[in-house]
Image (cartoon, rainbow, N blue to C red; front, side, top):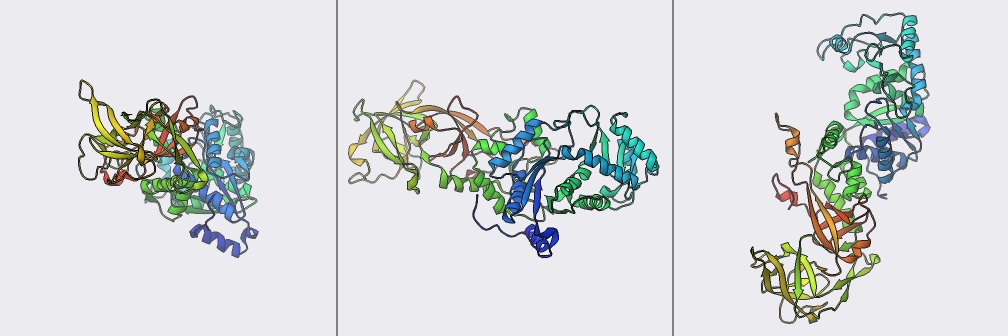
Length: 559
């Protein structure tokens, strides 16, 4: 976890003022309340870092509470994934709750509203309710069932609870103000009937389910939450949040505070669209490394520290904004540059035979695991007569002066090894280069050749000692910063067809024992992660390139 002092923001200023005024006896209690209808994404990470971070910094508490009032879209897989994601990010909750824990209390509160003449059972259909609600410029009309007696409403509500009515036949509504300029206050629905639904926590015990706006504020109050932090789309719902709190005898009076949600370039954060990508098979699942889900970022190899750093850098604002993907990727690079050991991997192997190197000889050349951190130690890299270099590191003729790799008749240094010269390029019948015949200078291990200057340095592996590995080169999932922004264009058309490329690589033998979730910098290639789901074979996922190549590419994939 970061030890830097948390930057101030308007939420912390509100909390500081509340504590200075003696509200809640100076206590700070937050909560993270996801709905378990999908996997968490990078936007949720911002909320996690905010809620848990504030609780930590104020020596307060933060609960994890599942907003599980919609059984048709929720399941235990999502519940467990959310728990895992929160812990992986480096946080833990003071208490774990489900909104369904409060169903008996919420039902009793609804009965209290009915007794006070502040709620009624309405028989209007969903379509009729929309007609009666009015518009932004026209007030709504009272439901013809608005003035039912308290006794009739209590009876009908009890029968709803007993499962006597069909889905959609009746709802319980709050009685507020059908002429309110805030449409959320025009007699909102509190309970609807869902007889056929099986809840992942309560089974079939409840044929009626409370609505989010009713459940959320009362759950906060029951738990003693002091500051209910939510994204900006709930700002118009705050009067309703406060109305329920004020009408009922609840144990606490939480304060709702809204902040701008995170939007990220080159991806989508709509849970509906993410669900669609999974359902249609356009990605391999919720944890596909191209997905912006926390599980996907984890499998991509993003360190949790980098995500926390990213959330801290973007800060907390009162308005929505879009953040450049390059900022997230740069946070990942900085963290991995500091923490990832180095290794060599050849992604596009081309064999090199050193004609003057003794056949059968094996040298073990020392190589530092990190150029800036001696505490990471070193390893021995086997060097033999036959090697592999990357095919992109050889051209028969240099295309320009900037090409500082191997050319026919030219020299280059092998990383941690000798200087070699290319004497011949062997080709097959189709003219494809199959092998390079080279010679090495035995006097150049750890020293420069006498009388000539060698500028280029390339990576390599021993042909006989290297290990086969599958390397997945992941790229951005979309080609454009704002997918779906073009009018009359399907957002699917913005998907990047080159977002995944799989190559069969050769890696140095030390990587054969790399444990799942290990991260490395493959020298000159980028940062890679040993896939934790592929336990029976060696698979590395590219987390991020060494530099931002997208900055130079207009509308295309990474080079």
